[in-house]
Image (tube, rainbow, N blue to C red; front, side, top):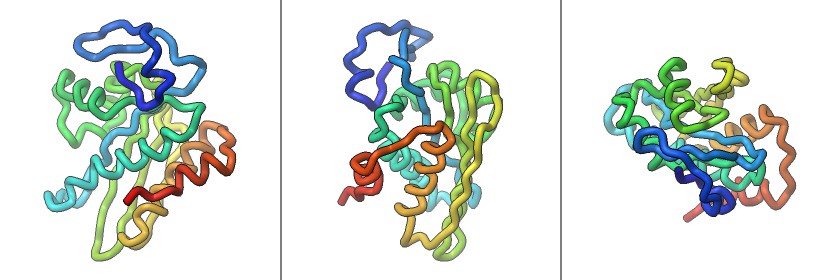
Length: 178
């Protein structure tokens, strides 16, 4: 089972569920899976944003030492194994099933929509064990401010998990790759 943190990658204690590897230990860290956001506009020209937003959030959250992120390829593998479609990601019941298969403690699920030059992202933080939504976040802004909008969602999740991040981590989260 592949995670996005080097510490988790070096842990060879895994067990297999179907074709997806599950960790035997999460080293006291919170395991988070960020699922692709649903394209509410159903505009095929925007479909790339579904995984793009999830990749951005995953990259940003990966800088937080208290978190272990589920690798996107493992999410894709589990989705195929369960026979889910892209629209299943915002469905809480299916999300829980996927989260359990991935051994995630928290799922980030949600939707986005674009109208003109404005984008709105709405996400829910789902506790996989209880099935409860622990927090929601909604950001709206210009498509030109996409990255600062994703920063806001990242900080919402960090706050929800009661994690304090230092300035070095904040700088890494807000660093924009070119």
